[in-house]
Length: 140
Image 1 (cartoon, helix red, strand yellow):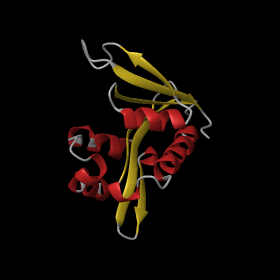
Image 2: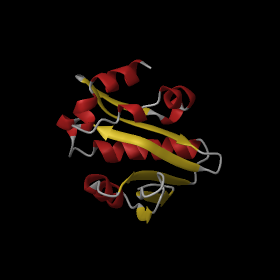
Image 3: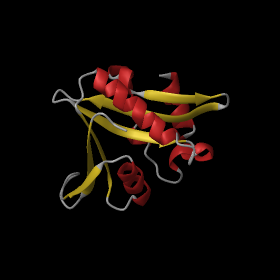
């Protein structure tokens, strides 16, 4: 839980002006710690994934973020690969992630990893379309 507290304290370094702190659920980290991963450097947490495996065999990446000073280094890709490996060890056959329709960075990142993207109307409630990414395992 110390890592989650540190990530929340440095939230702006990962997410900029977007306040996504409410999505950082301690229960997910507690219950699915084997698939919630952290990449550390000498100067702290460089990136993280909060994810879990569903009973139907889907590795769901709830959040993935890299710190502002390590973007473009391939860390996000390495984190996703590590999550895919952990999810596979826990029975996942596929990966899934969700983002907002206007999140161009997330769209480009997931597509570069081979995910298929589908806009799903009302995914997050009436009138709230989201982009749903799917990718069969293995990743890479």
